[in-house]
Image (cartoon, rainbow, N blue to C red):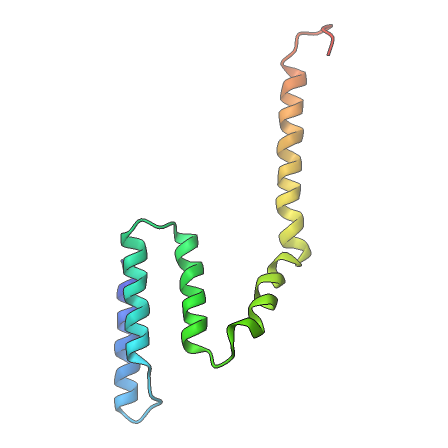
Length: 113
């Protein structure tokens, strides 16, 4: 709810700045995205899914470039970063090692595997 209030205050500030000779603001699009924000969260959709969907909607709404021109690079970029791939794999490896260690340590001494 705080995010919605912040978005509406930001929209009010942008409209006020536009009324005083600033750059024009796409008020209808921002209100539609704020409404979509409220509908998704009100429906109980997970936060990550809502943010992903709103990111796609904002990209389609406010960008002049066609979606297919930058979607591949946008989707591939995070998955090709070494750190973003290595850290989860390292954590999974550590979890598996910890499970195996607990399995071995829980057996009585002298028992066969």
